[in-house]
Length: 207
Image (tube, rainbow, N blue to C red):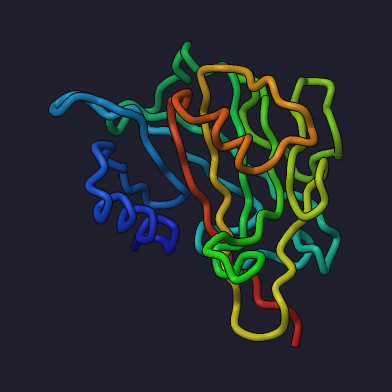
């Protein structure tokens, strides 16, 4: 059975007639990278031991709990076979946002909770409870609810909100300060994406 994240991500691609075909895994959030027709597809995807893709985000990872970042593992496939990360990948980035929150001044934007970029290509994923600020390995926590640090889900009481962790494999290191904005971060990544993956979670706030 496909997870919520896979169904939504596939639907977005189909509607936009994107040239990138997304592989559908039995579990975990997958994206992809460009490949010619008939050639095996290179796929970047993520898994987590913290909660299942499309599942409920535990309180410990929320802004109403311990506010720890979940753990994620990075994977690459060529066709249906596991493969190594492409040499073109230099860094990774992650963007967490609440896709159901109405943006400021009733805009079409949403709530950006957390970003981190310049995660080194040598990283196998993101550990649970990432530290704040700039890390020794070059990772930089960027814009979010609390700039420079992770801030987990915190939806108000009522129906669960859906949160998406977007992961980008980039062919460059980003020359951006910790005080950069979301728009500046996305613009800097544009044209440098080797692979992309998504992982979804639901957070029902305490009644």
